[in-house]
Image (spheres, rainbow, N blue to C red):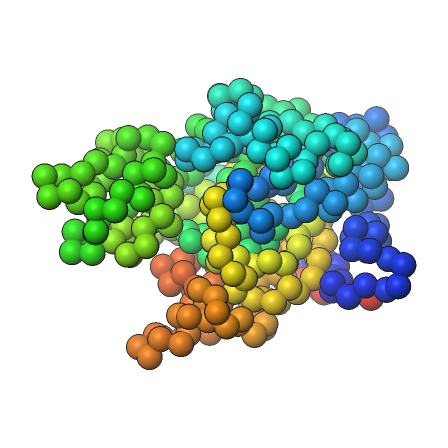
Amino acid sequence: MVSKVYFTDFRAKLGEGMPAKLQRLIRRAGIGEIDFEGKFVAIKMHFGEPGNLAFLRPNYARAVADVVTQLGGKPFLVDCNTLYPGCRKNALEHLYTAAENGFNWITCGCPVLIGDGLKGTDDVEVPVKNGELCKTAYIGRAVMDADIFISLTHFKGHEMTGFGGCIKNIGMGCGSRAGKMHQHNTGKPVVDQDHCRGCRLCIRQCANNGIFYNEKGLAEINHDNCVGCGRCIGACNFDAIYNPNDAALVDLDCKMAEYTMAVVQDRPSFHISLVQDVSPNCDCHSENDAPILPNIGMFASFDPVAIDQACADACTKAAPLPNSQLGDNLCKCDFLDLGDPFKNSNPAVEWKAQLAHGEKIGLGTREYELITMK
């Protein structure tokens, strides 16, 4: 079976802004085929970390929530707490962050909820259909209590999974703290002592006492405490911290696909992805580097695998931007161009695994028909 993925670019007609164009796209893609009448509708998105400005604007959330309301649904925006010690590690700080970045019931037309409760412990253990690495998944209770699930994703690069798309937004994003640990616990990083400068940037990113400094003042990883979240890898400016087990990144991708299956199985779901401000790393960072690719457009589909494949294909066809992490890498005289903007930006990633595994377990298909709307 070939899935339909609907696409429109960021060109605007006179009198029609991007939120209105997004509404037109999702209606064209068939969101109205879902029976929303009187149903609770979770709209999963990322509220951004303070200091990061690449996250999706609240205007887009309002556009989706308004359509759901017009169709008779009861929408709410939702995300779950993080493992790392940023400003979204508990529900209070998470809600303050969401408000600081413009997400509230007035701007978005619906309430904002934290899916796994005050401390990230309010979850549901959900059986995973066809799960190979995860027989069950730990998902935020508010996410699972919804009758209908919608993902609204900022499609961008990611230092561990290659890109953060629909599958990552759902699989990792809907996992409770236990669920996130479950997905991350296969591979754990190590420190190359020859490259470590003892700058202590990495320890600020560790929420689990997984890093200590030896008698030389150099970082080491305590694997008994480390949960393998990879935040320290992204924090190191000197490439001293790395994951020695490539299979661990593949396992992470596969687990995200299985967690996504746990979230969307047995209920209506719909998926929206915006490929804009394509930062090289996750929106969980307290900063966003320059985009590695130009703004491409908006995508919508009932199939989470197909929409990620379509977004990835569009990115692969796009020209890399200069003065970016990707552009800088390509300019290095000894750099091996892999013909892949995500691997060229973060060479250790294995992003195709999440799509292949998602297709294998029946989450969706990588075969799609792209339908363009002007």
